[in-house]
Length: 150
Image (cartoon, rainbow, N blue to C red; front, side, top):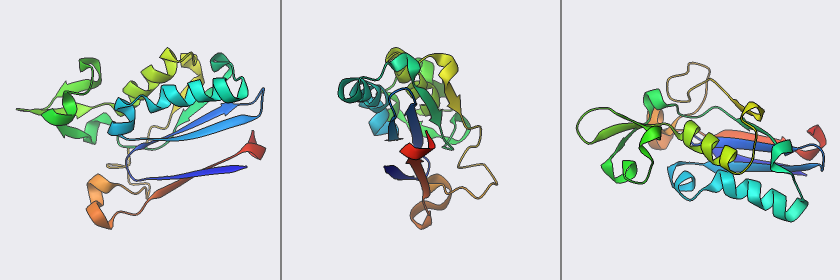
């Protein structure tokens, strides 16, 4: 089984449960983060496959980082202040990585089993696609997770 998603600044979250050969792949933008998508994915793996959240390994792939993710008040109002940094009048930098990492931890994933790619899709020079950088011309970063790799 192979799972695939496309992202251009949003977080790709890879979930691997090697003890029961189960995987999950999540596309977490700000809307999905508000909806609790990362924690919901952990709960679904537990419910459907009997995965112990403490046994999961999670990888948050390249995505937009706080340095480049400025949002307005309409988005800011949906997040806890510990995931935001003020950046001018009615402008805030949003940390989707910390928000999703918190959801994973709250769902039972051990903090030491959450690994984060250090590349920011917006400011990185590594050839990653970014909607914030290229707008409608942006390509997509395709993420694959294969059960056979587990």
